[in-house]
Amino acid sequence: MDVLSEALEEDDPKVRIAAAKELLDRGYGKPVTMTADVTDKLDDIDDNTLDAAISALRAAIGTSDEVGASSTGKTKH
Image (cartoon, rainbow, N blue to C red; front, side, top):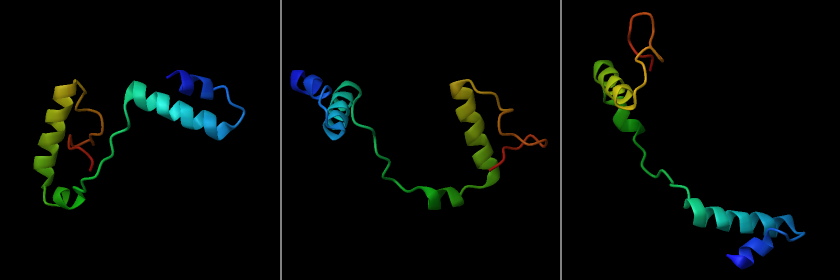
């Protein structure tokens, strides 16, 4: 950690960036990479099922169903 902290003071910006990246990776963890491709599977879901899933997710996180809804009350997707 001391070496990385000292590297933040280097003149070379590449060294500073590399040190900052290493410190952030250690402090916050490396970013998660999404590797699953679910786009084809979403095509098999009908609009009513998708609307129900979106409503359930919004209810779970406390978001209004009004967000993203059209005048018919259906979610735009």
